[in-house]
Length: 157
Image 1 (cartoon, helix red, strand yellow):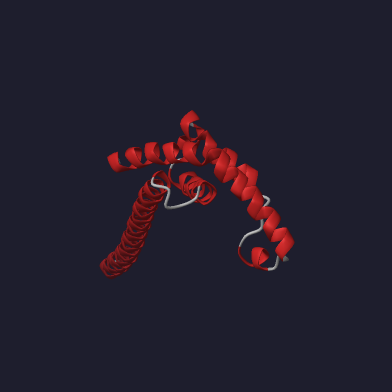
Image 2 (cartoon, helix red, strand yellow):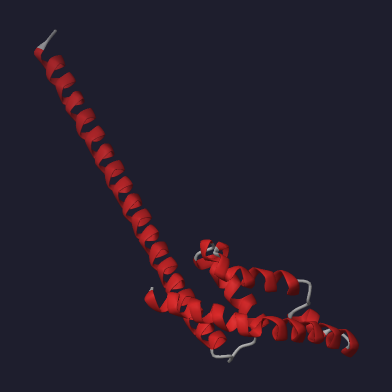
């Protein structure tokens, strides 16, 4: 082979090497940017979850204190706290001292809420209010104790 052909092949090889190096570098940077965006999105999601968890914890503190002081009814407190505990730590619902939350929730879950409540006629609404009042009378003091226990627990968190 002539010297010119060898030099031409070397030059073509160098161009291919440079081209592939540029391609690899661009892919590397794109992958690095993608991973950085993914990591940022993950950190943002973790931050939002932590903020939501802190908000739920504060809500549980306020509700359990209000329940223990009788500022919120046993039925309303049980429903609200049970719903928040499912998100915050469902294992707390399984503890025997908190079992009453679930019991009251199940006793009242058939009662309509929001717009369905507003659509009820007076006699039906009265019937549900009587049922709620019976639960309040039966479990009110015990729910205050549950609220006190939860208040102490959440103040330690």
